[in-house]
Amino acid sequence: KLFPYIEPPSQYRLILSCLLLGWFLIIKTSLFLLIFAGVWESLFTETYELNLWNKELAVGLTGAFLCSKHIGSSMVRRSSNGIIINIASDLSVIAPDQRIYMDKNKPDELQSVKPVSYSVIKTGIVGLTRYLATYWCDKKIRVNCISPGGIYDKQNDTFLNNINKLIPLGRMA
Image (tube, rainbow, N blue to C red; front, top):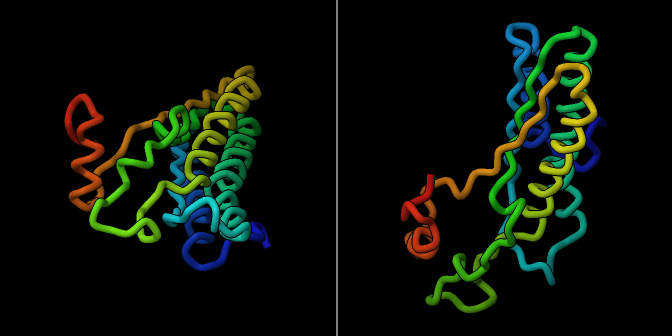
């Protein structure tokens, strides 16, 4: 099995789709956009299971490495000018403020938190990008990373109110 911690079909398909899309884009344009969004559960660090940690790192970080490795290697073999763009997060460079996830109407044991794996994975994506940017620079392959802030996706009103107070524009992307 390619990814020992990934349980088919959903997460395994995500990585395979990424690889197939990457191969298509290399053939057509020599451009590959690598986007990795894993599934993160809102769990407290004290009760965070090691098997969940391993699964999330397998999808978010190992998956990004494997896609970069295979797509970048293909770019090298083709001697093509390539671009790999990794997507990290603002939480790759700042720690999450757990207070913005708090809902005053919920007891402590039901509160939402940003899990430890999210920041670790996104920080790892930045490190992977830095490494590959210098590793393949002489092959004319550019490797860059963007670290956007929060993106609106129907989050609850309490969270939106809390986070929008911290964003200069007063809203998420």
